[in-house]
Each structure stands twice: as C-alpha cells, then as structure tokens.
Image (cartoon, rainbow, N blue to C red; front, side, top):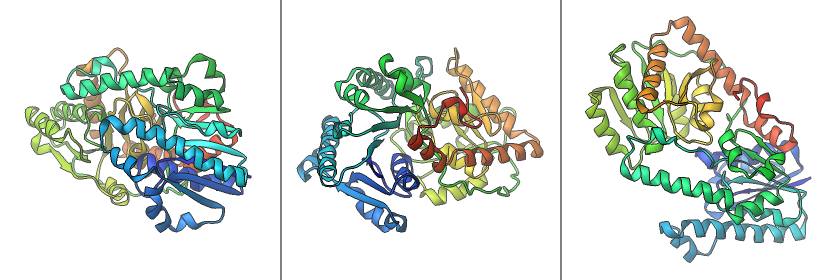
Length: 412
C-alpha cells in the first residue's frame, strides 16, 4: 500500500505544526508499505539531517513555488494567495508521481486548517482530511482587556472563520473527502451540516512516544508556575499574569515564568508592572524543544489559558514531565486536560474578572496542595501523556476506528 501525506509543515524537533507533519509521517509507516510525504523544499535540510527520515518505506517529495513567488510571501497581503498557490502546485507535483506509480490514498495533514483548501481530492483516490482546526474563537466577553490591535486581529479571524465555512476551496476539499477529522467541537460546528456524517472530532497533537516513564520531580520551596508559547494576545498570558497577582494574595511567594517571545511582550511587561508583580514574573526567550522539556521539572505546574488553540503541544510536553496543567475549557487544551492531570477553568457565562479569579483559584489549589495529592496529579499527567501518543493518534486516523468519546480520559 502506498500512502501520500500532504504536509506543508513537516520538520523534526521544531514543535507546533511542523511536529504534526513530521510525527504523522513517521508513524504512518506502521499502516502502509510506502509513505510518501509532499512538503516544502525549505524543510529538506532539517529532514535529511534527521536519521529517522532515512528509514525504510519513508520518502519525501520536496516542492516549492518559484523564488519570486516565495519572496512575495513576506508581504502580508500576498500570504493567503501564496498558500493557495502552494496547495495547487503540490497537487500538480503529486499528480505526476501518482501517474507514474499510483498511490492508494492521500491525507491532508498540514496546514491543520482548510482555510486555503486542498486539491488532493482531485487525485481520484480516497482522501482523508485532518485532523484540522480553525473553528475555535475567543469569547467576546474575554476580549475586553486585549489591546486594540488584538481586538482587530480577532475580528479579522472571525471573518476568516466565516470565510472558511463558506469558501469554495474548503467546500471542494470537504466534498471530495472520504473522512474529515476536526480537532474540537468548535471546529465541528464550523462544518456545514451536510458533511457532519463523515466528520469526527479527533485531537491533532500527541506525545512523541509511549515510553514516558514516571519521573522524580524535585520538591520546590514555593509554587513556580510556567507559561510557554508565543507572546500574543490570544495565548492568554495576560490572564495568567492577572491570575498570579490574585493568587499571591494567598501564596505571596508564587512566581510565573513566561517562556517565549512575540510582539506583545512589552504589553505583558507593562501589565505585570501595573499589577505589582514585576519581581514575580520572569520572561525567558524561546527555548529549543529538548531544553524546554527538561526545564519543566523545575516548576509546580503549567498555566496555559489560551483562548483558541486548536491543539496544545505544550500541554502534552508538560504531561510528559509529570507537570499538571491549568487551562480554560476552550479549544484543544480543554479536551486534553482533565481532573486526573490538572484543572480546567470554566468560561461558560464568565467575564474576564470571573475567569481570572477562576485561574487564580486553580493556582492557589495547586500551590497549596499537599505533596501526596500533587504526586497523584503528576502521575496522572504522565498517564495522560501515555494515552495520547502519536502512535495511537495515527492508528485512529489511519484505521478510522475512532470516536471522540472513546479517548481514554477525554472530555465531552
């Protein structure tokens, strides 16, 4: 059996969408004789430097648009056009290989969205989409403290979600698909009802291995919380800072470390100053994945109040290190975290102040939790990481044997 994966983003040891493309490629080999991956030529150096890319049955097709088109990609107005052109060009390249030696089925892996469509359904073979996201939105009541630029970006994103629902490019791909996997219930609602019969909810992130073992985490003298991700308004770091300020009224020694960089860093630093927690909030630049993972043992728990993440790889990294996670009941993190491995803060009917208080309460609970109970949560996090492995995710997508409610420990 010859399988083709369309994965614009596919690169080892980079996290985020490149990790999705890379891991799906590695694990699909268990279900086919040959796995062919069409991806950007820009990914070639990193892929070929990774020994696993030379394993038996794994092949890569590298495709990029002409250089003058790639240069225009730097212009924001051209970016959507570029992505659509890449999808079309990748289909044309795949069609050539398919004509010479036919594939048995094709998967759209990344982008993990259908905003720019996919033309792989035109190959005339079974076409499986996803898991994809994109239907997640920040609740309006939680946008109040965002900077004006952030509110505008959210408005544009809302328009993009509407466009994705009615875009002819999306419609063409969904109509051609044999199965459609979406990452969250919010993204399922994005699909028009006529496609719900072939759609299922499925997470699109996982842990790199099922070999995660129990790890001995050192006892900490005071609660140390960590947030990691790009410093953007919708990632929720501002909510974590405000929650820390409230939590320190009960646990004055608590600290928060923000790992990452982004355009909203200055806004976040000023927020910490206004809330009187400048000395308790540490900013650290983005770390390589392996260093970041190792650093997690020095924290009590992760606070990740993202407003519309469709996945949440950092949550799984935390689980893999036995770190409980505090998140909101929104997007991917809200489906990954449960009572065995962290605290999910409800946002239903809550405004920003109430949501911040909910986060602060969760931080106080974990920050004052007896060592024995915290150890149980740590073990639960590791167990959850083992449940949500790339091997299991790929099996579900490759075999179609999946139902959302059947994910061990999952939430509805």
